[in-house]
Length: 80
Image 1: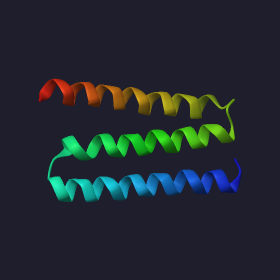
Image 2: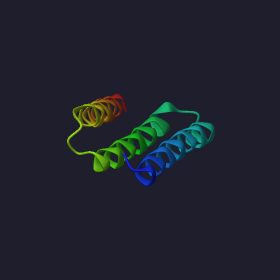
Image 3: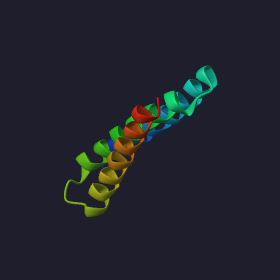
């Protein structure tokens, strides 16, 4: 994996965690913060996938994050 892509994926992950912490501190609800974190993690996975599209582990990781993201969004939508 190229160093630039790895750095970009790590930066997106760090920004996602930071945005999660800020959103949670501002709202005091996981409902607002968790989808934001999962969106950033999805983006980081997609960036990593761009480096090596033939890697099954990267593909499975992105698919798992997207699946969790969809389940959380579904749960939040039906919980309100």
